[in-house]
Image (cartoon, helix red, strand yellow):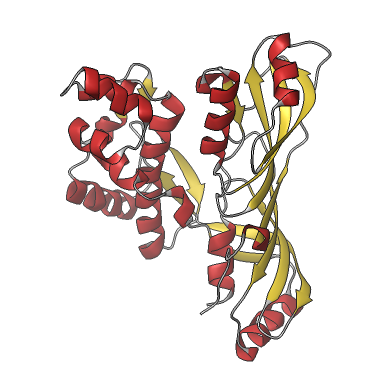
Length: 313
């Protein structure tokens, strides 16, 4: 069985993004290079050090923890904070201030990611099979499954609990200082404890459940596009409706549950996602006795771990 991510240097991710800078603006843009942090944890660390709310930060995509990643981010802050950001020194996080803009960086603003990945523990047969695929074409289609990092350790179960309004269960699963502090002062006030979290973080838990349902559908349905379920999801055919309905009923969740009135302004409308994605410019950069170093590009929202898994099937 192949192995990836044994070390952070085995999995290098560079965000493909050309931010538009302005001479003036309330948003500071910076390049963040990190390892051993996912994006949310890294931004949280920066926010605490600078004493700026997490909600003031923006980024285009959540990058892996066990990887060396380079991505763009923004923060709404005054001029003094720009100097503090430039001077900030954190272990495994490097920050380069780029300038300012009049708009924040938001999820999905980037064009994609470039990956350099060392795949280890390969047999001669494994390597031969992949080289044959690469000889045939440099652009390879694969099923656009959400990768394991989308779900984290507990994200899926937290998302289910929130959608079911099981607030106590969600609080038990969430590991967060603000949630714990609120419950120490106000035991059993579970909804307000969850409200202490940034909406981006709460949405991330719901996204994990949406991704789980999408993956389930992709495993059994042969269609071009599959809905990312939300309160306004409209089904284009009976098969899709039947499949999604079966998954939701098993989990005791309905589409209307994606309007979460208990947390102001939190509602997830839904979307669609193509079943197949394309890995472009796939190249073998280096080969050893039991490893291959691969380089390739993926569009935003596609997962390198899934491409590699399917490439080596």
